[in-house]
Length: 514
Image 1 (cartoon, rainbow, N blue to C red):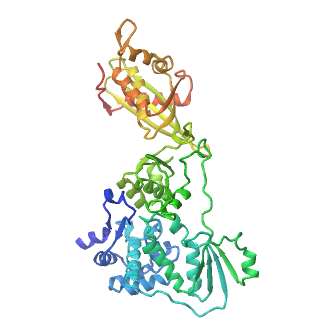
Image 2 (image 1 turned 60 degrees about the vertical axis):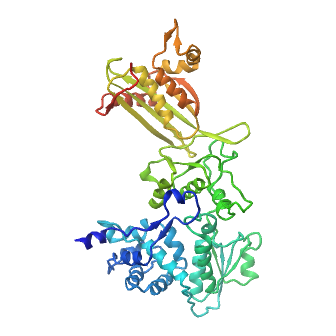
Image 3 (image 1 turned 90 degrees about the horizontal axis):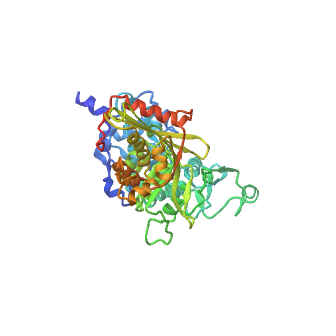
């Protein structure tokens, strides 16, 4: 029975402790040692019809290399992988195995899939540390191929062609080969000197030549490569290209970076190292808009550079497109996730620097048998993305005994407290009690009189007014009155949230009610 249980559970990997790695750029996942790798390899069922192979983009014989690990033949495992992949140490680290090979693993149906990626990483690292020669060339074809771009596509193409006997030259626009492996993926996920450069050297051993600082289209042309240089074929792997922006106001301000620029400055230009004169300004608080792997890379990088970092994503956590491992690591390290959130505008100060983002807040409160009955509040935060798509975040809570005015105040407070970053907030409420208190400067008068009003009467709900003022101070807030029960869709929704909360079973005590 124990063997069955063990087979269903993945062998844990060794990782840097979160509080330590959040302050350095050293590799997070240290992977397996020989003992752990052997244990994990023996979980593999060795399926006769291996679904994992169909899930691998390059169709590595996964049961084949794992079977050699079971025999403790690590060199044989490395040579088996090398038949299919020129970048095993890279792929073992950054490929989305959970949706590819591991996503097809039979063990994953009732238990945890075999850690194929971690076994590939272990095998490739062992081969590198033990100087195993994995180069194997076929008989020369007498044909020359130009590969434009030295990213993963270009390197893989070049390696595969060289193994088949073609004479391959890679042309790279930047001063260093590797493409996104060098400029995009951070050091803590993919070490450059130890892993990327070594993988590239293995490709060079196959006879592949690499020319850097060559911009095809400027330095040379495709026509000249064929007509003048005698290349028989050309593969274009030019990369992801220019970044896409959201098209919202303020995105050209100082302090706004595309992920391309930010990661390139840090990774390729070594902005994270003090001895390099290529610094990047991150500020004290960073918002990363997006939820994919690039967003996680940018957020975790900003965190390591000393900033309080937030992921701003317009959908739920379940819909985050990033790898689960990356999300998990980001959370462990202290990255904060603001979900169902998207900026409408980036706010700029008088010097052109970023100072916040813009959202819209709708609120309402309700009480049954005011002031002696239950009550509740409802709030709706709205954000519009660069494509004009609307996204909302709803908040509500019911109380055992409260008043309508307290719930109106709590709705605004809850909405503002849900914002972790400084924002420009437009508040829409059907409560003249709340709106006029600010627009007609009632609050200013109450404060001057020591929270007294009219004929020296004490102001009601001082605890909530003070709480509202405190959270309001973090943002730029304007108040707008809307007529209640007049068909305004957001106001009607807030009313529904408030009354549903008041009539619900999860009521809490309004501690400040007097």
